Image 1 (cartoon, rainbow over the protein chains, first blue to last red):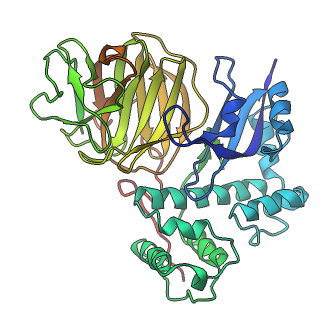
Image 2 (cartoon, chains in turn red, green):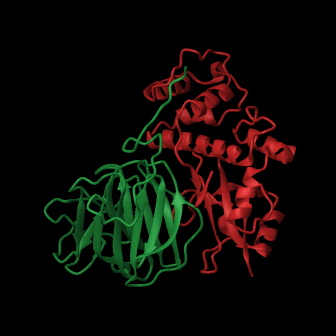
Amino acid sequence: MALTYRFYRSPQIGTGTKDDPLRSKLTLYIFNDGSGSRFWDWVHYARPVRYALAHCESSTHTQIAADPEMTPLSGELADRAAIDAWMAETLQGAPQSIRDLFEADGFSVSWATTQTTKKQMLRYLCKVHVQTQDLERLGQTTTLECFRRALDSQVNQLPANVRTGVRDWMQAKGLDTTWIGGTTTIRQVIQYIVENIDWPVLTLGDVEV
Amino acid sequence: MASASSNFNTAENPLSEGGVWDNGAGAWGTVQATGTVAQPTTANTDSLARRNSPTFGGNHYAEVKSASLNNGDHGPCVRIASATDGDCYYLARGSSAWVRIYRISDTGSLSFIQLGSDFAAAANNDILRLDINGSTLTYFKNGVSQGTRSDATLSGGQPGFAVYGASAVTDSQVDDWSADDGAAGGRTTKNTRAWPLGVDVGMAWRLPA
């Protein structure tokens, strides 16, 4: 049986012990058994979600899609060329439910235009993931709270220590924070950080996004 | 450039070899050398040895021979944070017939964060290598790539290895550890990727106009 690719959003499961590590729920369906079945994902330190690219048999994709906690983001894609073709499509055709899911997970779609591609959206998702990974590396777990809040909540709704943490983190990166006021939204802050970093090649597995 | 190796041919507990190993960083237990292999000092304790000399660049590999595994796990580690902080990436061969890449968070206790899916089982005497290059982790078994994972959380540190014997210290033994940071051509991947948020790789922040 030929294996196919499919993008997913899955919950993160586990408690963090070795026997029950924090991991994608895809691990309940996909095993690296020598058949080539596998998946790649990104770790998000503020929200228990994993965005992933899976490569497995069509019957396994069917099982995954039947799980109400799993959200396929694409159809089955035969090969890398099909992945590239799917990523080149614009977001216009994407269901509103997917756009709503991104927003609920803390990934703004308000910046997207009618010409924004799925690849650009995936790249945006990756950038936000990497921001949380940077805060985790720096041990700024308090500041991660900013990424747990609803996108349209305001900076003045954040606890003082979180506001200070975000300011210090941005300033340490050489980013201007003087424009941020009490009514500035979390969406605006995250968007500003995404837009003002020169990002290198970003990948999900071997796929450049 | 930096490279190091050990065949654990001097019995000592904990492993030191003249002070080049930090043993039992953070919440990890210590490792001993038997004169032929390395194994945990205490059963049922996740144990870590971190090479502290020479200083390795952020992009490096570590590898060990999986000498014997009955009940537990073991494997090479990269980017181990410090002598007192056991944050790292850990390529674990488990006795339950899997190989996984974990991002270990050491905050007084160890949290295991699995990256992507399991790899196929390895066997005794397999050479297990974990290579980190920018944000790309590559697992090699006996010199052959088994796949990659992506994570940008940890940006620098030293190589080493971890061992865990569930019932007895002899449940998990490794041999012939080595590491290299590639400056001398010993790496199997090239330093081609740079992430914006790490401290040891190129940072390029575009300030707002």
